[in-house]
Length: 220
Image (tube, rainbow, N blue to C red):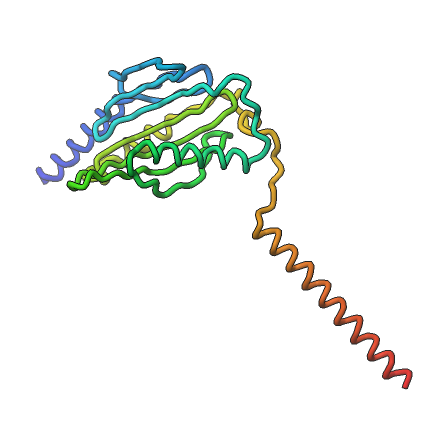
């Protein structure tokens, strides 16, 4: 019973400590993220960088202003290509890291890319860095949560709270990412439609030929 009470007390203490660990911080007038109270803020070459240490991992948020007069992206496909390039860029800067579980997600009304960059120094020291990328015409936002692989079973609540703390202003909408909401058909979809149309044409021709044969037989 004492062991159960002790475990329950430890859990309550951890939850209480964790709930007070991160506080909302304005990245700019449009985006807010929660960071540890003793976070660091740097303004470097137009980049706003916020960093802090949690209980099990470190947190980082970067706002990088896009070049002035950056033209809006036209379609969702263009946005996806831009985010893929960002993933490749981060992977290239890591010096051999492997981008894993690259997938699409949404933060509010905006589309985003999420993935884990895994690096191994060869001595068993494995670092995982969870990234969320949000692109808008005005700026690109990068959110990172890094942790040692040995702590992967401990970071879930902390990482989830960090991720869920990303808040966007109602002013940010999908047209801040790309202009057209029309969905372009993929190559596979185009092939499937073409094959379906060809099959329908073949069936129609077969039915016409059979109909003609029946009519000819009837006349004879």
